[in-house]
Image (cartoon, rainbow, N blue to C red; front, side, top):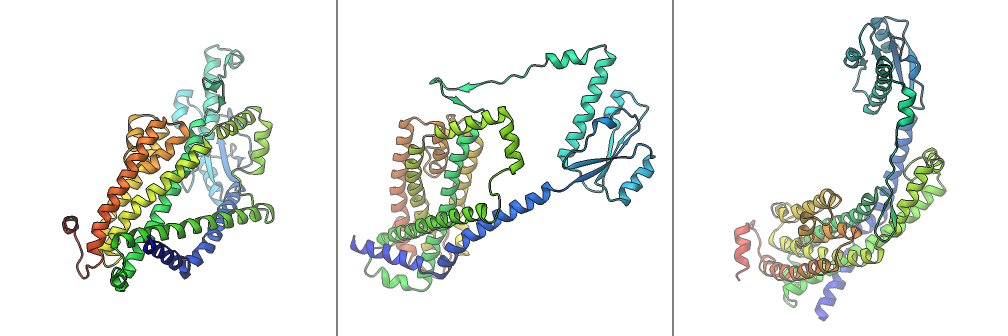
Length: 434
């Protein structure tokens, strides 16, 4: 046990004293916050862009319906011919030209309207134009049929279904997305932690193996102790780095939002004021806040720690075994498939299956498989999972960790002293029999 403590301490100190580790610990939050600031600034540039569109309405029926907005301005070209209008648009460098031809029935006009532009037009602008013309053509068709439009408008019903559970707690209509956000965030953090710090474990093993220091170390320490010590030492270093990122990132966000005048919140102040003025939007926002309050925060936090530690230890054992089996990081690429595929599969199953049916067969099965359960189960927890499913999932994960550590230790014990030859899956399988 004393040897294990020494290995953990040595690995932890070696990680935190590494220049790359120190630089990235303090530089990564700066880069992250800087990227968000840059994206926010670029978004404001896009918001200020005004699209100028030439309008050639030969029918004279639609011109009055095209009103200028903050982002789209229409210029009347109805007194010009189509060729002259095209030339004018090119000379004045307008965004495009909308041509509504005359002499056609409404049915023919639906397919005859054209939009000319030098580049592919913005799909939102096209949809906005199509809606304006479609609404007017619909009204004209109603008039031809002798239908009173005012009666139709007054007869339109707007259904607003109120959602609540059997306990009487009201929820928002996007409650599933709110829960998916928190579950997905937990799963994504685990995914990134496994990839970043699992690779760190593997590189540490490869470095000591290639420098032959490992031969001196295992003369006084059992290989399995060395492997576990490396995993735990790197884990502690990673957790420390993660907390430093959270603290520095939080401080930088505070400075950027309050002192530098950078709005890091989603949506502009104008959008926020519109929401405040919209009673329905305000009500929906209150329901979303209620959804967040009703989340099983304590259960989510506890299970996040359990699956975070369990999932990381499971995959780190595989990373350590791969590091012991190869002589360079390049050689390790052929063994990355058993790691990357389950991680990616778990994340995509969580995103596409859990939100659709969190208690369905696919979601339930993948939350039990040890290589995918840490991510999928974390995504299911906000939706409410039966306690017995969580217990079974954790038991399977713990048993799998034990088997994986034994499996990885056998590979580690043989592979750590193997040099000069690229191992194959067949050879690694033979090492398990020694």
